[in-house]
Length: 253
Image (cartoon, rainbow, N blue to C red; front, side, top):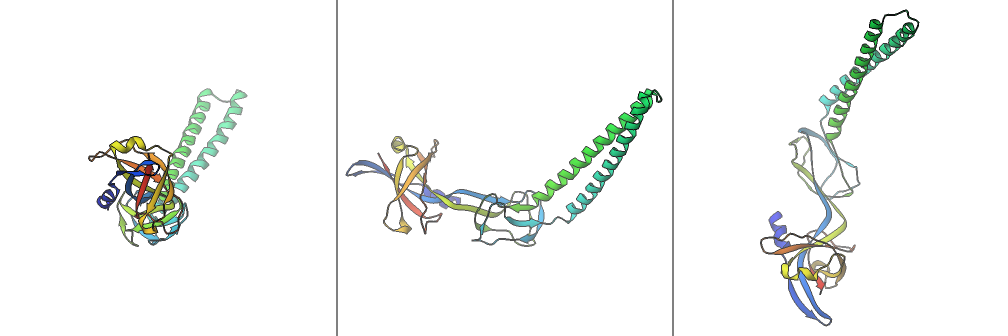
């Protein structure tokens, strides 16, 4: 796929003469401005799958869920541990307060008061430790539910119900088709003619002979082995315009 995309992006740029002077013409391919491969962070078995290829999803929509039985048991144990630690801390706080009052009345030794203070401090630290343990389990549970990072369209899905996922292995591909770009490559000699934010004309072969109004979004200042440079052009919203379509862009000199 990457090889095919590279071939499509490798433009045959030329300088043509129009009625108002010269212009540079390059070919390229339409791509989404945002696209992401969605993978699971941990290893786990897929227990629910909520999307198919072609589905539109909103931001933060649940895409799939990994098994959580073991982590749910760990969370229950951590919650109980936190509750017990909090009970002990509260008890030691009340005891320390009583001893402080006795100490002020000179009815208690300083060693006894120090011991109570130490016990309270240790109990408070155990509460913090149990709370951190619970927070870690909550984070692990969150990692087992994959959400859409933005609204878009599911264009690829390798995930299947019951599948055992591998950390970092792509399961879904999400693309945002609300903003599309044309990516074209131009020769190094033509680069000075291309300015960021400059208006350009774009023609998409699949949409007919009409020229669309585009804008240079970025010129990537790093060439390839063929001495061509990537230029990203923002495209207008147009019915029937999709990523993967072939197009031609005209840069006025």
